[in-house]
Structure formats: C-alpha cells, structure tokens
Image (tube, rainbow, N blue to C red; front, side, top):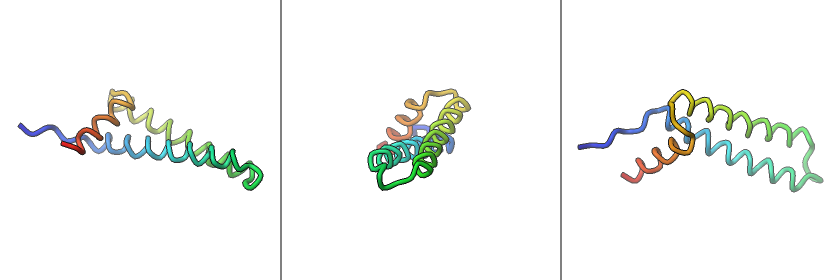
Length: 80
C-alpha cells in the first residue's frame, strides 16, 4: 500500500522553516559583525526571520499540525 504523499502545504511549511533558520543565522552573523553592517540591515534580516517564522506558524495552524511534526513528515517522506 503506497504511503500518502505530503501536501503542498507541508512543503511550504518545510520551505518556510528552512528560510526562517537561514535568516536567523544570517541575523546572528550581521549582529556579530556589527562594526561592518548597519542597524537597518540587522532590522531587515530580523524582520525577515520573524516573518518566515510567523508564516510557518500560520501554515502549521491551517494544517492542524505542529511545525516540527510537519517538518518531520516531509523529511521522512523524502526517504521513503
């Protein structure tokens, strides 16, 4: 019996969580090298990371699943 494939919303959740993680790491890098970057750049990357995190939260609410559960479902389905 074939396993059900993840919905496009779960893929969207995966993309949003990865984007939030990348933007959060980049925000930390800009904060760490604050003598080279401006505070506007830090604010932009912080806002981007928070927006991606908020969008992933809203996507997980619409799917009635947790963000971690949706992420694990998509990752485990890739190896099936």
